[in-house]
Length: 379
Image 1 (cartoon, helix red, strand yellow):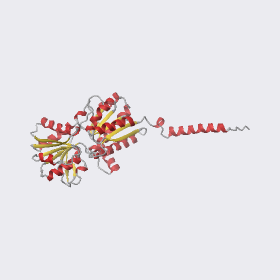
Image 2 (cartoon, rainbow, N blue to C red):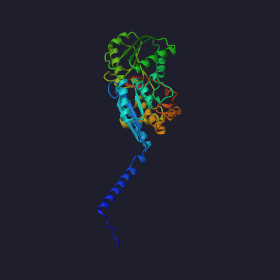
Image 3 (spheres, helix red, strand yellow):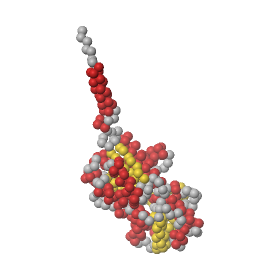
Image 4 (cartoon, rainbow, N blue to C red):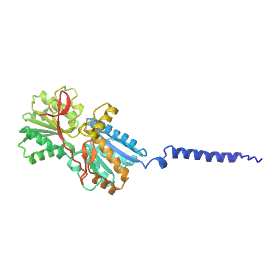
C-alpha cells in the first residue's frame, strides 16, 4: 500500500486552487455577467424632483419604475441600471444633470422631462450620439429629423388644435392667455394662436401675459384680463391653483381653460370646489386599452394611486428606450431604424408610431373638474 503524504507547501497551493475554482463557480452559476447577464444598459433620467413641478417628475418616475420592473421580469438576463437626476425644471439644471450622467455614470441613453430641459440637452446628446427620449416635452423646436432624439409626447400644435376647437364651439369671443415664460409655455401659447388662424376662429386675444416659475401673485395679470370670456393657462398646476383662486377673489366669473398639465392634485389644494368647471385637454385614458388597464392595475397595486399622463409617458418612454438599446446596443443607425419601423406599437395611449422626426401623434379629448374630481367632459 502506497501512502501519499502532501507537504505543507503543496497543501497551500491546492487550497488556493480550490478557492479559485469555488469562487469561479459561484460567479458562473450565481449570476456573473459572463454566464447569466447581458452587457449593462445604463439609462439616465432627468426629471424635476423638487420645486413646483416636482409632482410631474415624481409621477413620471413611478411610471419608469414600473417599466423597469416589467422589463427585468420579462428579460431575466437584462442588466439594467437607472440613474435619476433632478433637473430643477430648468434648462441649466438639465445641462448640469446631463453632464454628470454622462461623465460619472456613463449612460447609454437619457430620458428627459419638460420641453426646456429636453431642448437644452438635445444638442449635447446629438453631439455625443446618445439616444434621447423626451417625456412631457411638447415644444415644436424639439422636432428634428434623422437623429437619436425621440419623444412620447405629442407636439403642442396637436393638443392646441383641440383647445381651439373647444373655444370655437363654446363661442368665446374674448380670450386671455397666461403662460409660463419658458420653452414649454411659449411654444404652447404660439401653437394655440396658430390653431385659431387655421380654424378661422373669430376670437379676440385681449392679452398674453407671461410669468416666471416662482410667481405667486397674479393679481396684476388677472386685472388686465378681467374683461375676457375665458382665460387659457399653460404652466404648472401650482400656478393654476393660484390663478384660479386669485381671479375668483377679484370677481372674474369667466371660463378657465388649460392643457394636460392641469390634471394634478396640487391644482385642487386648499381651494375646495373653486376649480370646478375648468376645461382641459388630455390624452391618457386608463380604461381605453388592455395595455392601459393593465398599467393602471399595476400602478394601483404598487403605489395605491391612479396613474396620470405623466406616469404613462414615463412608463412608455422607459420601455421603448430599453427595447431599442437591447436590440441595437449603441448602434446609431440601428436605433433610428428601430423607431422608424415601429408601427402601431401597442402602448397605453393606443397604437403608436414614430415619424421621421421622432414624433408621435395622439388623439386628445376634453376633461373637466367636477366636485373636486378630474372627469371626462360631457356637454
